[in-house]
Length: 449
Image (cartoon, rainbow, N blue to C red; front, side, top):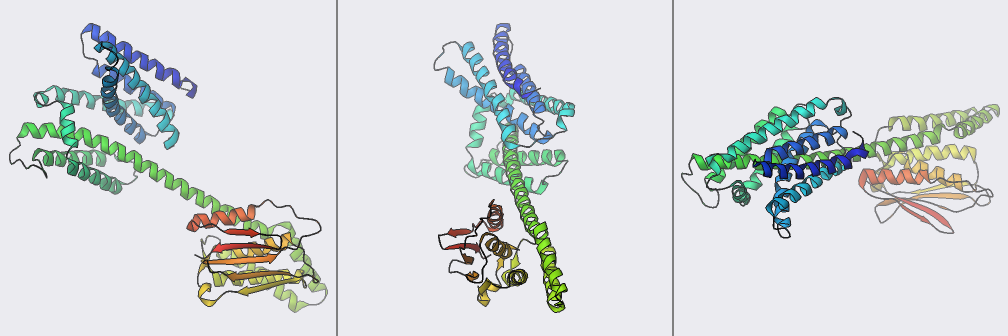
């Protein structure tokens, strides 16, 4: 089923619900189970069409049953204000309920994003699940029709049950605890079933004895069985809602972690690209060639040592989220010495970092990228040296600043370097960098972690 046919499907089933309501009334038969079957069929078709995963399909079918009952009751009360015919009220509330349930499934599958691409090829599993839920619904209907609910109806029993806030809170706590213990395993049918039955039995026991508000020493089996049915319905609903919430939170955390991993990969790629790009290698090899031709073997060895040290540092911290300021300063110093071979005059660096700050942490390669950024966008001339300062501030940050010395031919900037650095600090600590640019200077402050 294509997404374009969903409106037609939902409107069609809503109209069919209303028609069945009228036909059953004319024939003098109950329509509850027929309407439930139609609602489950619509839900199954929507879940299969949107490839909703099997566990979330089960939750959808459960909530559709509960939501249909609640919405149908509320809709009947609302439309009863305007219409005098009970049949018209019932038909209209049924139409309204089906529309709301159908579009709720569409909205749910759009926003929760818990899809199984294989589900489209396995509709038999969804159908089997729907049949199971429908059989449980028939069983509950049979139980409700027995003498258990002759004195007190289902709605009244549910209201009484939910009025016991202590039992309700205990059920929620037990459900959350059980879900955490069950975890995100592939086969959860048995533990979920056992959990729901145990929690329902204990909750019914507490409610039957009136604990904790009005203790009744001998409630009787009739009351306990009635409370067991009500507790089961309540626990199935609570479990479904809590499962959806926990699944949504889990999915959101996974998405955030995936974003963080993506940002780290982009940052590492950017730093690596800066070092292995053709310009850097071309300049480095040209400098090395000049040193060797001039017979400056000692300087050539130093240059090779620093160049290999840069790559060693990057490989060592390739997967590290943080690095000590002391190590980052040593790396920045190595990189700066390479630049000084290329620019023997007109380039200076001033470092003023106290010892207590050097044991703090920063994102690897941040200082090197900021130094590279300064040399890329500013002219380097011995008559007007480019001075890069690295210092600590009173705001728990490290600052890298330099005077602005415009080049004759400005270098185009994409801003990706600052973007990646900013994103790394947001992911690692939720703190942003500070960028300050005036007519005279450019300054970047990075958080100390």
